Image (tube, rainbow, N blue to C red; front, top):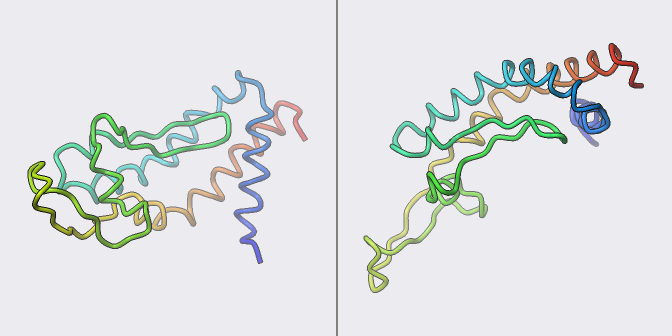
Length: 138
């Protein structure tokens, strides 16, 4: 059975996509504000890296809110997050393709999202639905 907040969030996301650019611009600061603690935690979780915290960005897009890590600034972030679903990853030692090592992942985004999702999801739904009502969307 689907989580009720996921269903509400999916509907709110569709509402957001249907809204005019002006309305989305109006609610963008509120969405950023509620997600700020989550972004801070993600950056704190990655404080062992000199590049990853500075590469983490929050984007408010037409379809909703997205946390991104710049591939250009921190190309190693994806492997450390464990996006491939593994607990370890392999890489050559200082570029020497003859010697490879296995290293544990160090997730930083997922723990932050999980810790804040129960507060952020309902707040996002409320912000989007309120804006939709104020501007005549149903």
